[in-house]
Each structure stands twice: as C-alpha cells, then as structure tokens.
Length: 311
Image (cartoon, rainbow, N blue to C red; front, side, top):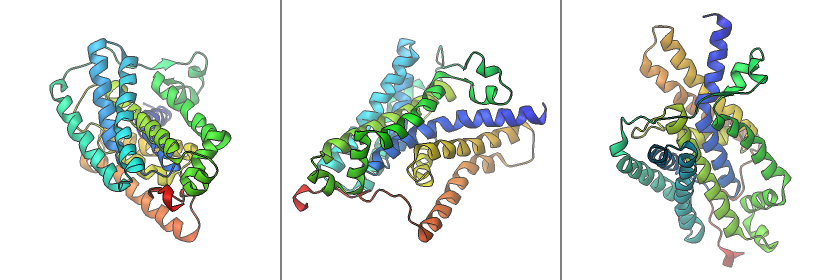
C-alpha cells in the first residue's frame, strides 16, 4: 500500500469514525444555544443505538431503525427538558442521571441482542462522477447515506441558527431569557424544542454506530463518544462547522490508532484506544486557557433555569 493510499484511507476513516460524534455534537449545540446544558448525551446515544438496532433487526428495515433511534433519543431528551425547564432542576444533575439511566436501560433492553448480526447494514454508496475524483473522491464521496446526511445537517444547522427568525429567537433565549420573554418569545417552548431536537440527533449518532459503523449491539458500545461530543461543543465555540472539523479530528485520531495496529507498529493497543480521550483532555485544557485571554461565545444563560416571576 502506497503512502498516498494510506493517507486517503485514514482521512476517509476519520469521517466515518467522527460521524457519530458530529451528530451528537450538533444536537448538544442546539440545546446549549437555548441555554440548556445536557450531559445526558451518552445515555441518549445508547438509547438510540439499542432502539435502532432492535427495530432494524425485527423489521429488516434500516430506515425504520434509524427513525426509532431518533424517537428514543428525543424521548430521553424530553425527560431532561421536563426536569430542567418545567421543574427547574439542576441541569448537571439531570443530565448525569439521564446518562446513568440510558446506560442501564440500554443494557437491559439489549441483553438478548448481543452477538446477533443484522441481515443488512448501511453500505457505502459512491456518488456518480464525484467518487472518481482523485483524493476527494474516496475521502468524501464514497460513504453510506447517513454520512451524506450528516454533511447536509451541518450547513442546515448553521442556516437555522444564524439565518432564520427561529434561530435568532433560540440564541436570544440562550443569551438572555428574560429579554426574550419580554419580547414575546416563549422561553419554555423554545428550550423544549431545542432539547428534544438535540436528543434526536444524539439518538441518530447512536444509531449510526449500531447500524453502520459497527453493526451489532454491545453494552456501552458508544464508548464515551457522548462525552467527547460534549467537550467538542466547547472546542467548536458552539459553531456547527467547527464542530464538523473537530469531530473529524477526533475521528482521525481514532482511525490513526487502528491504522498503526494494522501496520504492526510496536505501540500498546491500550494506549492507542486512549488517544481520542487524551486529545479531548488536551483540547479542554487549551480552550480553558483561551477563555482567560479572550471572550468565548458561551451562551449567557447556559445552565441557568429561567424563573419568569423574577423577570
């Protein structure tokens, strides 16, 4: 294998490995832009993964499985929204509880599914013409439909946040909910929609793992990707395009580890598995230092419940 083909393979795999992180990070951006911190991403991804796998296995329809994953992630997020928006519960505690609940429930629901293969999985669909381009073709245009969907979600999310009236209202709620309320914007409804939509995207990230990336079901198969997605939101400064680059960076580190193993390079496989998480810690340290030197675009009301009577 030539050096060029190795680089192309690593970059293509980086996109594949980074896609579940990207989907979950886009969902977290949506929720946090509305001022709601959701640390339950890992739990929602697991719920999406087991629901998507279960439905796809029983119906032989991958898209029905994907839809079930969206609903499962959205249902988990609905619980978080009820606790934090309606009951004004601590967002950190509620999110952690959702992760614990999602991890336990997915393990229980999927206990009988371990080791059962899917009859069909999402397969790469080369884009006619574009897939034959040198370099860019095999890297960008030879993937499965869910990856192409994630490509479209990034500019769609950016357009929604920055170019629509609802996006302006969403960001206003995340910055100053009292002012948004005074302007006639429903803070509760906006936060509910953002959190549920974010949960559906997290469920989609989980479904990608169980239906395409590693088509199977294993307990805790997300392997901490939900936590990486939460950290990625900070790294990306709550911007969808930066989140896309960051997700593929983490995916590239993951892919590099697998590639080094196939090349029989004498590196501990345990160290290689640690690389994405070590990178997460390093990124958080660098971003934290950056916040001390200049203002970072953190939503002003992030993590804070809104009490309308105090307006």
